[in-house]
Image 1 (spheres, protein in one colour):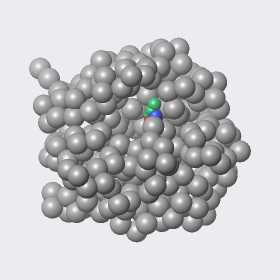
Image 2 (cartoon, protein in one colour):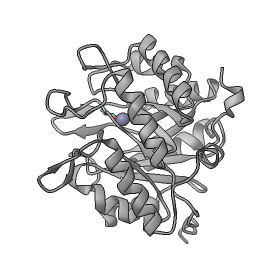
Image 3 (cartoon, helix red, strand yellow):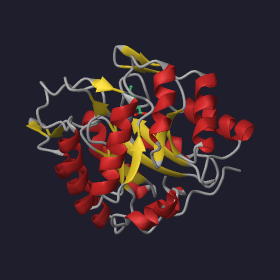
Amino acid sequence: MSPAPPTTPPSTLITVAPTGAESSKADVPALPVTLEELVATARAAEAIGAAVIHVHIRDDDARPTLDLGRLTETVAALRESTSLIVQLSTGGAVTDPEEHRLRVLEAAPDAASCSMGTVNFGRDVFLNRWDFIVELHNRMRDARIVPEYEIFDLGQLATLQRLLDKHGPPYGEHVHVDLVMGVPGGMPGTAHALVAAVGFLPEGATFAATGVGRTSIPVMLAALSAGGHLRVGMEDTLTYAPGQPVHDNAQLVARAAGMAKIAQRPPMSIPDARILLGVRPLAAVA
Ligand code: KMH
Ligand code: ZN
């Protein structure tokens, strides 16, 4: 017998992923790449209904970086200016070495991404070896950082189950998954694929979903109707409608918040999101 379907939560956790590592500022001038731009984006997203920010940062030349000093400064600035849950990317760019990706945790965010397998990524490869995954999962638990398990393809949910079976639950005990759909090389961004993925979630897990490019809307609608949460932002979506470039991240968060309200699952408050994800209380943050 297959496990019972997850119950539908009364509200929707919205994560904004404003920058990513793949787009260039020259091609996408609205991309937030400086600390000031990132903080302004975060404040706007919070005001509209986001509860989590998934952060990639850039260097002075707007190139992706995992520089620890900058990451630490970014976490501090986001905490000072917003109440958002700060989730740092440990995925970085496809060119980032494993030791740099592990060192991200030293910036002491509330949460961090933890990808569950290797996937073709357009013409590149996003490499996530089993031993690296285990190291990341264990170090996050030791550092009391909540993982968001990033799933690019169906088999990565089997890897997640194996990880939990062999190495135990994450810090906070709750398992939260992000289905990153429509990456060229990963699972398609369709309702059919989303329903299949939901069937392989670990027991008790919650999930969010994001659809890359033009899969953004089908994935958003499917996630809402399947009881899931949403990730939106310019990391994944640069075209708002055919022929219409995204104006800014706030536009994407506003659309997600609007859809969540239509689904009668309005944006989740940040205190509720902290409880759901098992993030450390603010008073306990070093
Ligand atoms: N930039 C991708 C190669 C994550 O943030 O953890 C990986 C990524 C996943 O964006
Ligand atoms: Zn990312």
